[in-house]
Length: 291
Image (cartoon, rainbow, N blue to C red; front, top):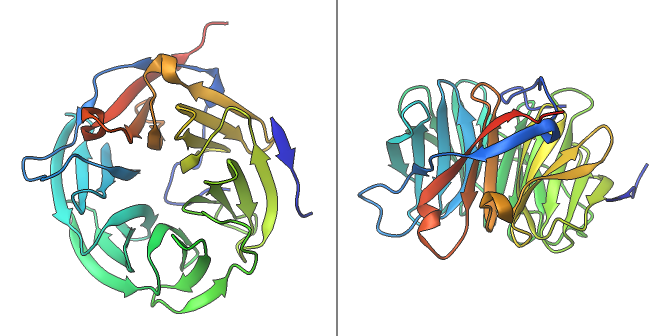
């Protein structure tokens, strides 16, 4: 594992504590969840997954232009809502709300019971991922830029260093002065750490990680999808060590997004293949590895 320092937390709405090291767990494949609905006209292309309260899973389906809500207790699709464009990234914001990047805007939705569309915030380019921190939104764009804006759409900060050509996926980690943004560098096969003013701090790289896509935080660890390396990697933030959690042997092929439920001790993975696997979320039970 290579760790490069170029200069010298967790989202309050996500899981902030981890009772165990993810690398100490054994992952066992179990029943997949079908998320394609009868109204879908195309196979699903799940760009992001986000855990919700009440054992629910939110998924952005780029192919069908919808946001889907899955009941994890019954492993069934509860409801979906059509969005005004192509959905990509998602993040939790206060008040049982989520923000979803949708082509040239950020769509806010209420998620308390069903899915209800709220305010739509216009942006100046095709956006990819979205994050939230202390009343501000962080947005990545297909053109390669990153912006921080207020909830009315006013740009507060722009990334001045354009060395990140494809900062399409990222994760905001921390809710205080130690907060940072971890970006998947699609081209350089790296994870880049930024401060909240969008300055580059540190870069992480591993030979087993190729074309990193979605990132999610669990305690002080990041789970990263390796799209062309066909694996799920874990980055331990205190040490900078990167370890493979799942690979081809466990049925991982072109993973696009991932999340982990500490309440259920389950990993959820969405693939980006050319087959029927796109219409399912893969599920893995976890148990401690034997000493």
